[in-house]
Amino acid sequence: MRDVTTAQPRQVLDVQPTPLALLLLGRDADPRSERGVECPGDLPAPSDPDLVERARAAKEKLGDKVFVLGHHYQRDEVIQFADVTGDSFKLARDAAARPEAEYIVFCGVHFMAESADILTGDDQKVVLPDLAAGCSMADMATAEQVAECWDVLTEAGVADQVVPVSYMNSSADIKAFTGKHGGTICTSSNAERALNWAFEQGEKVLFLPDQHLGRNTAVRDLGMSLEDCVLYNPHKPNGGLTAEQLRDARMILWRGHCSVHGRFSLDSVQEVRERIPGVNVLVHPECKHEVVSAADYVGSTEYIIKALEEAPAGSKWAIGTELNLVQRLANRFAAEDKEIVFLDKTVCFCSTMNRIDLPHLVWTLESLAEGNEVNRIQVDEETAEYSRLALERMLALP
Image 1: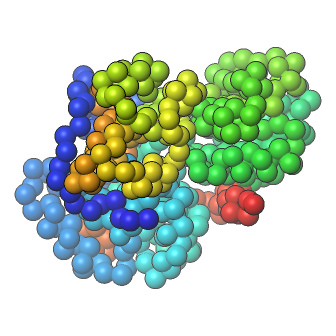
Image 2: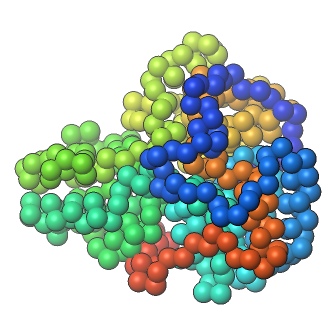
Image 3: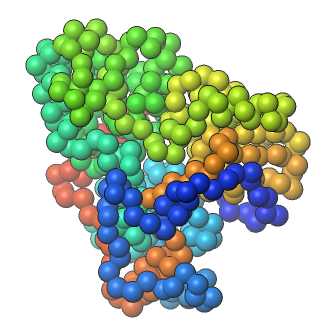
């Protein structure tokens, strides 16, 4: 995989800001995000003209003691300082492969930093530049809610038939629950393999926390029907389901979704096809089922990047995923005459991912360079043990 940060002539995507632009750019607080705090201490001003040089100087001072991870959805101003880029699980594994790094600075969101802490050594410290960088999807399934769900399944007499499969985009608590109950973790790349494995272990799957990835994988890849799937709503008594519905279902989907991918609609697909004749629509499997069904190609973030790398010059693409990545890919492939547009006509950044900006990164690196440990993410030993068990089951998938 080539580095996605290669500089190319800048291409401006045809998107229009909405009244939520400041929030979506991470410039305001989201009451629904998992962390509602600011970094302690004084952040550098965003207008400071020396921010880039300050980040570079602090990183050079730390040397091999620091390893900076940059998720694909991060801003360009942050990505330029990443030692590696990738999706959440790839980055956590990259961190584990660098045992000499004392500090792992994870430019992503909270659940990603937790995964890195689980997979790295005890002497390594994982740091999240802004503790407010959470994930609304991960927040949609709490440990208490999932424990209550299991009680509902037990009362319905089906718990012993259910194997939990949790998406990587979940908290360490949910990963630990999955490990304790004989389940596995999946990514958007291996969800089909994870579900095939789970159905070899039991008759039903409880899929957490993204309903769309679970539904799309079951129906599109495994050939199930929509009737095989039921939606468990943690905010309703018994999840809003009867015991009979739970007994009849094969896929019990948690009522969770990605706030970015969930905004793409069938209208978005139809509009872009009318506007750009011959366009290829490529979307992430976290999109709604009707969007995935109408798309030409569906795949993970890494799949999207690879598809565009291999696309012929002059081809046209509408991409349904986070805007920072789409903009970066449009810039990267502009010189190859590949037309890459955003699937939606409105701005669609990941609001919490965008909370990590250059001032937060500078503050983090300078603090570490001065010997001050900040914003360390630590998962307790028991939670880490069961989470690791679920992750190991994923790594052993055929």
